[in-house]
Length: 174
Image 1: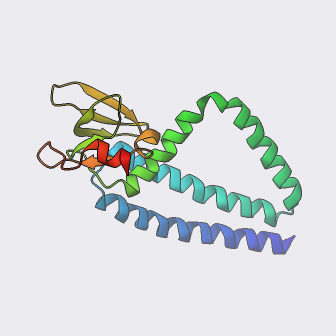
Image 2 (image 1 turned 30 degrees about the vertical axis):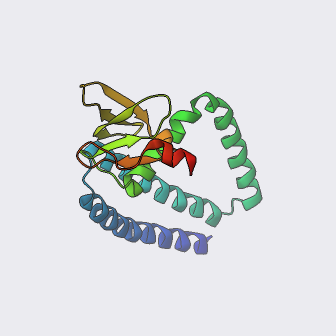
Image 3 (image 1 turned 60 degrees about the vertical axis):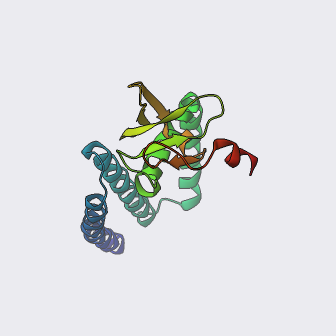
C-alpha cells in the first residue's frame, strides 16, 4: 500500500511538472497564432483535459484497477455516450475539425478565398474561424457560415485581389 501511495505522489508531482511544461508550450503556440481568444481558450481547455485524463487513467491503474475491467467499463461508457450523441456526430466532427483548422489551416482571417463547390459560389473574405464554422463574407455583403468539417473536405483556393487564376473546372477534371 505504501508503494501505491509513493507512486501516486510521484504521479502528482509529475503531473504538475508536465502541466507547467504543457502550459508554456501551448501558450507559446497560441501566442504565435493570430486567432480570437475564444478559440485559443477552447484549444487550451481541450489539451489540458486530455492531459488530466491521461494522469487520472494512470492513477487508476496504480491503485489496482484491473486494466481489463477498466477497459470494459470505459468501452461500455463510450458505447452509451456514442448512442446518446449519435445525432450530434456532426457537432463533434466540427469541433475536432476546428482544432485541426487552428493548427493546420493555411488561410487566416482576412484572406480572400474560394471554396470549390459546383452548385454555389462560395467566395469571399474569411471573417472568423470559430469552433464550429468558418464565416465567409461575400463581396455583396452576404455572410456564409461554412462548417469546419466541410471546409477540410473540399479544395479551397486563396484568391489574389479577389480573382483566382485556377478555374474550378480544372480542379474537378484533374
